[in-house]
Image (cartoon, rainbow, N blue to C red; front, side, top):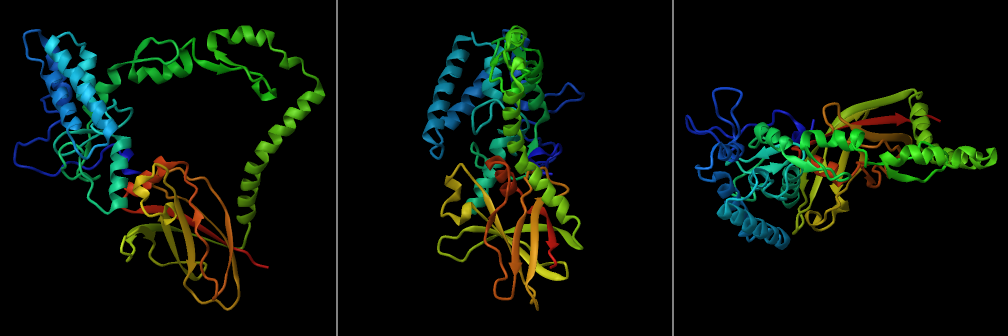
Length: 399
């Protein structure tokens, strides 16, 4: 399983006796709340107490605005948010939700986290997406990943989940994008998918060509007047032919897999890609597996990022490609089909793609072919991990 989604996560490095990292809840019972959340929630206890939450949020945003390494847009956004937070503190008129927003936001994207929340050893918060992106960037640049606020080292073993902040964020109100009503974040997704009367929906006759999209409360009226149920048989056959063509490629893939499973010689193994750097003046990241044996032959897998472009860390779109190398000597051409799938303990999403190659002593390595991961987010998950663990299947084609 990817470290970014592990419920436990690695804890912060041990410190002096009694020392607790900022942001970690401390208390005698289940009511204990994480540091930033406790400060913000404690402010609501009475009007006579100092506005510690607003001050802490303003200071955090001011630090982000003054960071010379931050992108210009982020510095500008942080400066504007810091001014607004300071004005709210000075006027004393800011809502509790607004002050909590400035305290609990991610220190990288300055938005409220949508899922898991991680913290560095000094308590600065990062959403799961930004945390993974920082680790992936550090891997590409051959640097140690650091917290954007305090520059302390961060990694999957040094940073941990902050469950108290996650719970606090899930209770903050958020606006429905359809009806504009306020709901707790923990209930918003269900409301938008199942309950909102203004959510965008489709006609039940979309499978026979109805293109209507509209609010849910108008669905009944539209379906009663929809003309598609009265289509002739010839019109319906044309629509069904288009649907068959769209599904034919998908069925072809599964039929190919079922055909390969009937072969006499089939082998599979778990492979672990380990990161290395090239010996060039400007080093590049690549991955390679230890030698492994499948079908009585010795093999190696290699992988590279964005086809070894010069600065993949500057690109938002990231891909992985791999090649299979035969290290054994063969007496006759060895024709094989192969595919890579995710390992048994990872949650990365990979679409199965079958590749074919004929190995000989003179031609013993395939071209680099794409690793069919879903998107750049999944690629960052792999890059952020210490090693990449996948499962290789090999099918020997006998004539």
